[in-house]
Image (cartoon, rainbow, N blue to C red; front, top):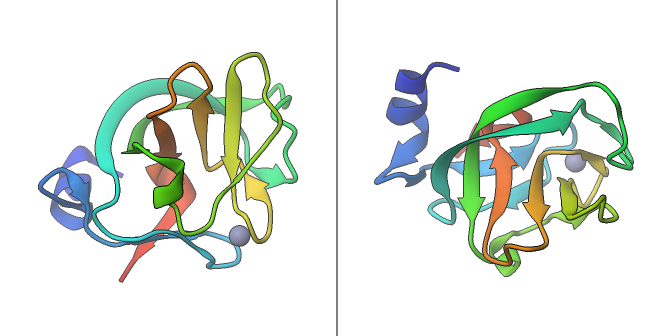
Length: 120
Ligand SMILES: [Zn+2]
């Protein structure tokens, strides 16, 4: 996804314009305007069911929706903490990680744009 596509299609005042859904089961993750677009490089393991966060392989992603409060989510699950990181997974089908959270920063939950569906 290009930066321009992100800006034109997904954002309104820097916030998510559409709902965010799980790519696999279409469970709703987040409602519109609950997150702020944020660029930060973070290595996420490849997606799989019931991830334990210890996968050796993955990719560094840079585009995230940043959510300040975990209660803003409609549905989200967490993996066990690995060092200081908890991975976000779908609460329904448990595929993940769709994002990450550092337990040292209580006000930052990151959802990777490339790991969720954007739709009205
Ligand atoms: Zn799901």
